[in-house]
Length: 430
Length: 122
Image (cartoon, rainbow over all chains, first blue to last red; front, side):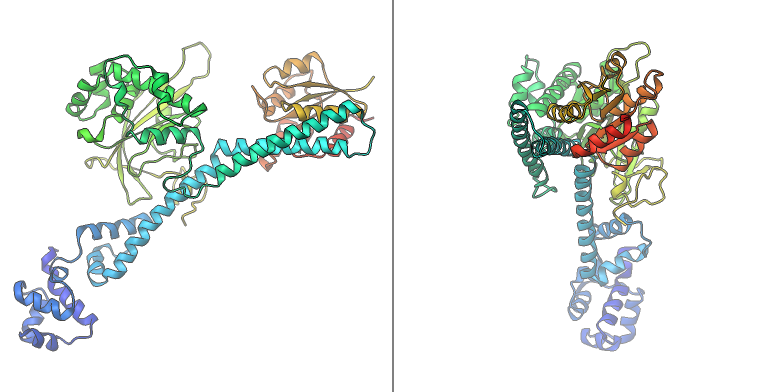
C-alpha cells in the first residue's frame, strides 16, 4: 500500500483513539461527515489546509498523518522484532509507529539497550570464561597459597626441625607471600574494570595491541612509503606497549611491512577498486598469496573511499590470533566463537579460498561478505602435524547477493537461534 | 631400603615442602621439574610412586600419565596427580587415564602423606 494512500486510515485511527465522533471532527474542520467518511476510507485524497486543520484538531503534525513513521523508525522496529525471532504483525509496523509513537520509541530503545547488553555479555563471557590471562592469574594465586600452607604446616607441626630447614621455610613463606600479593593485585586489577563497554581498562596484551591499532584505523602510514623503517623503533612508538604486547605489535608490523612491499599502496588501492575487492583477482595481479591480499585489503583506509573491512586470523584450535572488528563483527578473541563463520569452515578446505555471505542472527540480520582461506604456516616437513592459520576478510553491508546468506552468530552464549546444529551451550539471551 | 617417590612438579617451594615431609616420613624423594624429559627420568629411576603435577613446562601431566600407562615398565606404577585445577572434568580425565589418586591445590601436608602411605605403605 502506498504511504499516502492510508492517510485516511491514520485519521480514522487517531479520531477513534481520542473518542471523537466523525460528525464532530467534520464539523470542526468545516466539512460534511459523509465527506470525512470518504477520506477516512481512503476514497478521497487529502492534502493542504484541510489536512492541516484535521491534524490540529487531532493534535498531531500533518506529516504524521500523511507520511506516517519515518523509514528509520520502521527499520528499527522491524529490526527489534527480527532480533529475537518473535512472530509479530510486521505488516502493521507502520500502523504501530503512527498510532503509538511513544510505545514504538520504547520498543526501539529497548532493542538498542538489549543489543548493548548482548555486547556486554559477550565481552564479560569472553573475559571470565575463556581468558587464559585470568586462568593464569588464578593458577599463580593457588600455587602460592599451596606453598605457604605447606611450609607453614611444617613449621607449626610441633616436630623438631633443623634450624637450617626452619630458616629455609621462613624464607619460602616470605617469598610466596610477596608473590601472592603481586598475583592478587594483578587479579584485582584485571577484575576491577569499571566499564567493559567502552574505554575499558586493558589487561590482555592482544587488547592493548588492538586498541593501539584501532587508534590509527589499522593503517600504518609509516610503512606505506618506500623508505627503510626500523620496525623495533616503530613498535616502540606505540607507547605504552611493553612485554608481550610489544612483541605482538612487532610481529604485526613485520607482516604489514612485507604485505605493503609486495602490494604498494599507490597501485593496490586503485587495483582493489578496479577488481571489486576480489582477493583472488588481486592475488593473481600482484603474485602474492590470498591471505596476504586479505590482510592488505583490511589495511585500506576507509577515508579513501574503500568499504569498511574487518579481519580475523585464527589457528585451528579456534584461538583468535588477530582481529580487526568492524560494524557488528567482533568475534570472541579467546575462542568459543560461532563455528559457522567461513573463518572456521576454511580449515576443512586448506588453501581453497571461500567466498560467502553471512548474516548475523542476533542483530537483525546484519550482513557481511566474507573471504576466507586456511594456509599452512612454518616450514614444510615430513610427518609433522599440519599447522594452519585461517584468515578471513569481512566487508560490512555488501550489496545483496543472490544466494541465501549463512546465518551465524558471535557465540552460542548470546545467539538467539535455538535450533542450530552448531550450538554448544544454551543461550544466555533466552 | 626405603621406597622411592618421584615428584614431578615445577614449583620450587612446593617441591621443597613435599620433599621435606615425605623424607621425614621415611621415603626417598627424587624430584624433576620438566614435563618434556619426565618420562626419561621415570624410566631411569624407576620410582615406586610418582607424584605428578598437571601443569608442567613442556608437557602436561595428563600427557605424561598417558605415556606412563602405555609403557610396560610403568603401566602399573602408582600415580598421584597434583593440580591447581580442581574441576570435575580434570578429575574424570585423570581417572580415565589411570591415575590412582588425585588431590587439588591447596592441599594439606597430611593429605599428601596419607595418600602416599596408602599407595605404597607396607
